[in-house]
Length: 257
Image (tube, rainbow, N blue to C red; front, side):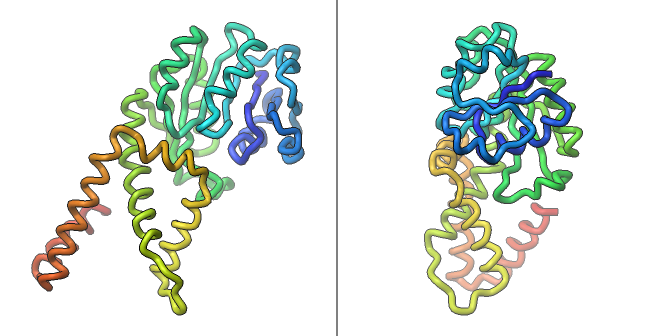
């Protein structure tokens, strides 16, 4: 299969590496310097080159802020039956965009990133395939993610956003609150260092990505849960309520079993 990857960043390079041994792969990036780090693929920096390559599927690995812009740049050079696909963690506006183009599309979300995951062992990681996607596109990505030993789930666009609000917004918000009150520690404990490593990894991500995930319409209700639990915890601490704290810790342990 002929596959065009948009963007030679971390995830674009990852997909190029994974796919280039079994498929005819090209990588397009407007910055030729970024193409120095992709191998065993056709490298393109001029969109007019795409027409001659004639891809059957396009994997948009551009940053979230430029997902639709990247599609718009290459759309005039694609066959009408070429499947458009994205791997964006934020799906806001994508369903409407795809429907407007009238082209076949497949939307997925590999829920791992180079910051935290070990790309050599993804067996503990997951991926979401959007159920409204093109049938053949879904088969392609399900086969790909299964071959990577990812746990694959199928959700609608709406279910995806609800899941992301829970699985990303809660840890993102919690980590940002932790980092916002931090100061340098001369003798940091083990737990502190682990939390700090997570915070540093999170804050190395693109600001637009973090903002869009937190601005998910389902996020406020999740952040309110954090606020309510912090208020409960603060009350027990101020009152030195040992029995209440014991019951609280028991419930928390059940939550993570």
